Length: 318
Image (cartoon, rainbow, N blue to C red; front, side, top):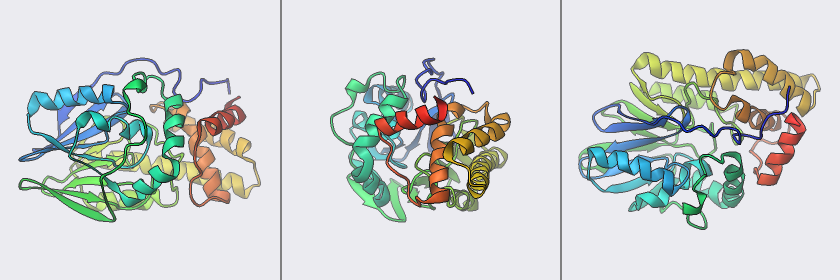
């Protein structure tokens, strides 16, 4: 393996944004595999799920929203905590920022460390990092399990369907329209980031999403999915990737291999199938490291810091 640029530091090409309506009240802001934002336009207010990395980037989401409605942006929902998903929140000036209690706990535990880590990983997405207010993006409302919001007569459910991408994952569900905003629990043509994941839980969480029978879905990365076939393809591909990483790493651990050997074998095994997905080379060292941890001694993900990022990368890719 040749030496690779760290994480997404070589990814400097601007992406084409698409803003598309998925159902009567749901819209998707997507950008060729960059982090997505989901938007719900209710009778009297707007809800935004996942904010973009900075207020400067969020300004473009707001511009698109204002092209179709002048209703106030009342709610920002954090589907989970990663800096690249939440640090744009201040731009929306919402009345409330909502997250699961588990996500709140993750911000307490690792917020500052994750912020420094992700700014180093994604220089293009954090190009306007000076627009991010000091400190953390704190939820003003937390919930456990389920919370229902009413945007006028529109019912919006916030659901914790299980752990996967993080311990705090939340989906936004419009039961009347069978439309779901999945956060990073589901990706499409993009590599799932699993550095803070629960590999053994994630497939069941995807089954719990499938049980809702969504007919439209905004994934964390990749194009919006419309219709049963596309939604099922997104769920199946995400499940296959997570299951394949787990199976390969578990086999390496059982054979007594160290992390370096397991990483090289897993990368080689998965590249033919998944290597064309967005951020494959970025994600794989983090994903395999976390998977190796879970398969050996760390049931819960360890905190990533900017220093740990670099040490891991030098060990596996140096």
